[in-house]
Length: 312
Length: 141
Image (cartoon, rainbow over all chains, first blue to last red; front, top):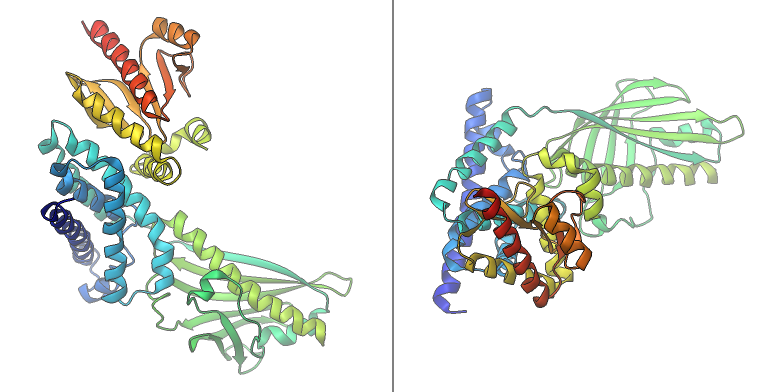
């Protein structure tokens, strides 16, 4: 490949990423006007709000438009899209200080949907009516804005259960607070830097008590006990999330709950619930990841409580 | 997987952008696990565009559509499955001779399917496309 052709491809890669960034900025600006939310607040959300199907797809269409005169084959489009799609996460990591785990989780859908846009654009602009087809870009842009404006935030709950071979009274002691977990987490995302729970402290078993859930990387979730039914139910509201790049803007955790069910045979079913709102889109994709990660957090804590209860 | 999606999850195609995302997955799969197939698919596109009056256009289900005027004569999916509209009579002949398969979703229609795996298959698919083009032009006239 000639140097000039290589340079043309690289310049166009930057164009498509620039387009993606401009779309995100305009997205924040327009939505702040429409929803009367301050520009500054929206600026904080732009890295998470835009839909990770529509924006990469629009970027892919733009990339295909800029590459249309280069007569690339499908496999070459794929190779160059690999390079193009790495620029945006790299920029997010360096400029927005985005979390590595979030980028890893988001990259597959960004890559696939972006390549979908490339395929669409490749066929579209390769046809004899390419000028007319430019209308797809503003249409995609409108679709992105409309998706953001009409998006409905939804609270979800994640539930996990563990059987503990101990009476509820024994389990209850360790539900309110527990000492540090010594075992290393075995989830692959934790090895890549995703924080995992370490310990919990609590002022006491009463409504209004301050509770702190301590994660690795010195992250602390500040919580307040909101409901107690002794030996049965322990609910707490999350009043402050740590400013961690893996969490910031992506996920709002509202409250957590432990429920103890006496099985009548000396065992207890320990149920852990977390209520959350996910800001990332598409919801079906990121909700799957959130449930995987939340479940790992639940089970790490619950297995620890199970060990403590069964050893006492 | 492809069979399951095209038969059971066909309704998902009405969601904007999803067919293109699915198509991207098919092409990425071909690029990763069947390079020869991808090369053959590229060849078919190249041959098709060299045919007079044939142009390509995005297919509504995500693949690459081949058109004569505004009428579709066939389309190529990202996994190398080529579908062409040859009419009911010709379909029967082609399928009975083993030149093509009945369409992967609409077996009793005028469509045929053909799997492209190698360069020879791309040539054969081109011939099928020519049959489809003749059918379309005859039918249109």
